Image: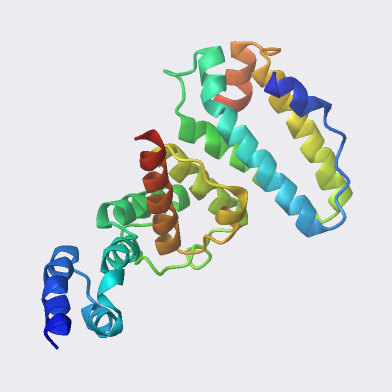
Length: 105
Length: 137
């Protein structure tokens, strides 16, 4: 129920870089808090640990750290949110998740 | 006169138990306050003086070390700022999330903005663990 609410949110329109930064951290926190649920859904307990997934998410965010246009950041956040909702509502399958976020980082 | 000396005596066991380095300042403060305030004083002082238990600080240090991939020789005191260790803001948020997971607590948005040193993180953790224990019990 909480995931449906997440994806329907209106795309953010950050006024400044600071606001965009705050949104990025909120997104990161939301993602980290849903990691246990993700591990449960896809049975990843033997494959990865929570901290490994957390650092994967952090590195994905870090890849785009040089961007200064707040609108671009908003769009990236929207896509990130979309991806997170897809994963948490089991729209992906185990091999997708493992291939994209566990192996080959 | 007698009451003042009694209050001084009462505080010595407290100070011995908590093993705080800055005992001189506590003694100075306690003498001037009236006797009736002592019970609440004891509770608040305990919270302030034992705000960062050594094991908590140690655990926080370990998590920080692992997160920022620090070499074992890097000096890590409770006062070190995360930015000094080469962590940017995302790393700080990640460290806070790691602490959340480790101690099974939930850090609020506003509180996590102010965490810049190891000591602040440990203090916040102590406070939240205490609150959680009170709520649970």
